[in-house]
Amino acid sequence: MHLGEDIDVDAYVICDYRVTTGMSMEKAANAIAAEQSTGTWTDLTTTTSKIVENYGAKVLSIDGDMTRIAFPVEDFSIDIGGVPQILSVIAGNLFGLESVSKLRLEDVFFPRSIQEMYKGPKFGVEGMRKLLDRPEKPLVGTIVKPKIGLSPKDTANYVYEAGAGGLTNSKDDETLTNQKFCPIEDRTVAVAEALDRLESEGHKMMHAINVSTNGDRIVELAEKVQSWGAKELMVDVITCGFGAVQALAEDPSIKVPIHVHRTMHGAFTRDPLHGIAMLPITKLVRMCGGDALHIGTLGVGKMSGDPKGDLSNLDACLDSTGGYRTVMPVLSGGVYPGMIGRMIQIAGKNVQVQAGGGVSGHPGGVRKGAMAMCQAIDAAFLDIPVTEYAKDNVELNEALIKWGYK
Ligand code: CAP
Ligand code: MG
Image (cartoon, rainbow, N blue to C red; front, side, top):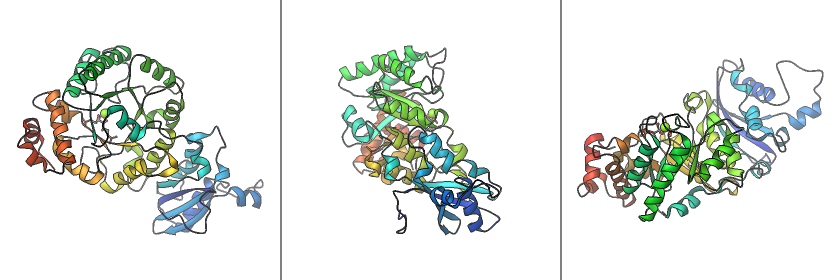
């Protein structure tokens, strides 16, 4: 996006907000800029024109219901503030201001000096493809389902069957951590054995163990999980916080990719007029070092989302921002083989497509469900219509009969 010629993009954090207000857009935009920087509801005896000039946020433009506001880079912490402080400035009190009835942070652009404070992904698309020996085709995975209830042994069997059917990835569900029926240590060890068995049979696969927990314990838990044999970690960025992703990514002892789930994001991304769009979240996850991130299913799957918004998330994962490694965009949520062609047509091949119900709901079980997913990926990769490809691929055909195609 063009940020405007008369502004030094390295001197400001620039945000785009969608505003719904009963007052003039100009008044509302100024109220936001003031509240989030040097002002408040009244004039102050302690403010000087120098403070306002140096640290006051500036309204750069107003276009319909959109306004672009620039926050001086000096408003941001030089070291310890991290994403929590960034969010307190660009996405803090403003949502509750009486001068707006609705407000949505649509996008954010960071200056170089802030980008340089973050290291980005350690693995990203390239690193994950290398680990999996899969240079070109989309990655294809599953979420072990039922999401809760399986024992460590059953989980490992599921993973083995999924790998034997050709899947490159699998993962815990976000609701699974360390419940009695499936202790995390036993699960990690059992899954690691399944992955080793697959590797000895010539197939590389990774499974993300969910290490989401309190901030003071996450690195320690991740280290343990890694020592038990985990080849990938999963963290829920919204419930655990961006600092959790960053702590894992920047800890030198963590040597496996981080799959970032975004459970709870719908609470603030879903309303098109209020909250925070997924795009700023994607940009922050990439800065903090997530290697793979859920970006939606381009309006095709079970979760709400629109192709345009999800595509902007995909671009934010794969563009050249900040010199960071790229993030593997994960398409997940109600996915089944018959929709894969459509998604890849829109998103391209640098994605990880994954399905829980769309694998273990296959009439032939997990292995055949995995085969059907891989066949659908191959059809899309080769640009062959899925119905055509299904003629010679029984498992795919069975999946199309059960769930249809889009
Ligand atoms: C998918 C999933 C994920 C969603 C979240 C689930 O399972 O594991 O949590 O993908 O959505 O539990 O729903 P299914 P998003 O394949 O069985 O639907 O990626 O939009 O954050
Ligand atoms: Mg889930």
